[in-house]
Length: 259
Length: 309
Image (cartoon, rainbow over all chains, first blue to last red; front, top):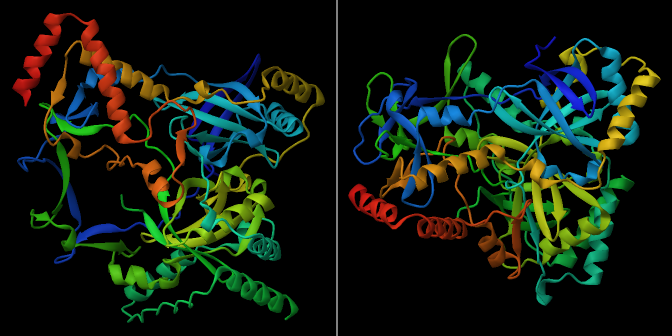
């Protein structure tokens, strides 16, 4: 049973719901330490003045907001204190929108919400969100920081994903390929056939982090003192024309299906 | 500008050389590390035994086993773990975008074409856009494997990294109660509250960076009052708080590699993308401040500027 990392209260118009927040992500990164190659002693990080190389203590460190290449405003500890938002348990839902309105570039980090006392009301909200097929745009303050998030229902449970800010998300327009690189109708047709031939539903269980698994094995083998044979990279295929490549790919897919 | 990764996307026997660029602008709250007098600070690694400064060449990565043994993995070994995966993103499936639950999305990147011909790049983009499908594949970058969805977005390819299934917790593993039957009246109350707040579009002011706004306002006030303003050469080299995210000129890269008319915008369409544009905007703002404030003050800040340099 995981521990809740925070407790709050959803505010949807006049409706309120107490919730607990749990991380939906499990960190599986293999962590390494930086060592000095010669004696394998762990390294220590020192903060120094760039111009003199002198070490600077934590008390003498400040943050500065850059205004231009050579100008910045230094922030004193009391300035930073002033910027801390007022503490609150409220998660304000500002609006609901159709899920497709929010592109995936916005999503930053997912959390599960769990009920805090009233299970009935919790599952009622999940049910209502599912029926209406919407997500809620939320704002709250947690551990002295402001967050924006998307409230949604996933398999009958409530989730909250933190979102990136409006000036972080980038979009494009005006991409017009030159005539010489615009694909031919015949190429488009072949490419479409190729895409259709390997169409599927998204099944995350099919994808394993192979690199992580192999790295684990390598570490274990080295720990036992075994010698490791490096794997040789595959040879690159010879480049062919776009249309030839498409035809050959399609033929290969068909062959696989027959076999 | 250096790409984060370069390699090829392959689907079938078609290969498309690409470069990977970040598609997320760093938050405008990112600050520089300085000392009390405003000198730029930096990080150094020292050996904990010898207390001497170490260069990048003198560092290795070690893994501490449960029994406390330190296993060193060399750069060659990191590469040899999966040599075929560090150069290619092989698209093995094409799936409908809406079938990927948002919980899986981790971080978006842009893929810019890097080969001589961009024809195959445009072909894949047009095909996926028309079919409404995104390609799924994986690749290795800087000692980590990433599962990615390759998405065609207005003529540009994006690689959005996805979490692996074993990186996502289930409600059962967290220990959430089993979904019970919800009371109809309570569902109705929530449904009514949802209806009242349902809109067609986002309001981007709701998604703006309030922390950055507050910080900017404070910095502007301090600048106007000429308090704690630093003018120093080399300031831009100061280490950032989070390892110093570099602002890149994405638009220039894409105009060069993809289309002369490419336009990159932020979602709120208000912030200049390139560092030069942003500096120009800052400079314009500062100039208007100076003309509106008293001459005496302008002169004072002028002399201070000289003294600090």
